[in-house]
Length: 184
Image (cartoon, rainbow, N blue to C red; front, side):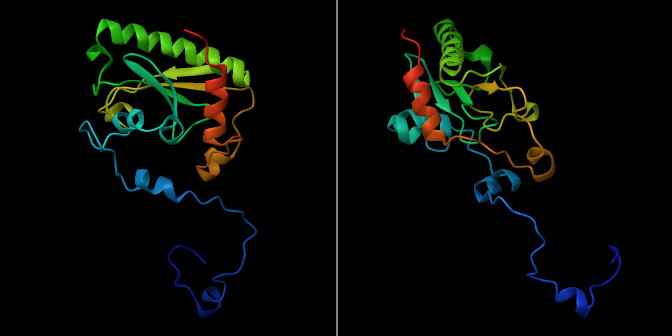
């Protein structure tokens, strides 16, 4: 049947017949498909303003500093993907105070050390997306990605199924990072 043909009675009888594909259902991702975004306002609508107000396990907080904190990415690219965030609701790196900038950098380095100790990655991706047009999912609250990488960590799933297989649960990865966090 081509795209211009109309389904016949025989074609409709195939509804519900297994096609041999396994499916990974990720309904929590629908918010991104439909364009729903966290609020630009500080407070309850911003996941990075809310996380520090919760218990560490509930908020996925790995480490709390004086002006910045480290949190697990709820939608990780790889196991152990963390975000370094200032407590203050600012959108741009240049909006950080000197004190925040120093701790932001120190926590990025500490996150790399903790990931090295807990999961021995072969490399890292570090980055900030400044603004929605640059790819920031939460553009209103600055955050830096620290993503551990391993040789061969890519497979066909992200390409053909827009699905990422992660070998460890978020809470298990958070606990491993907390245990491996370097002393101050």
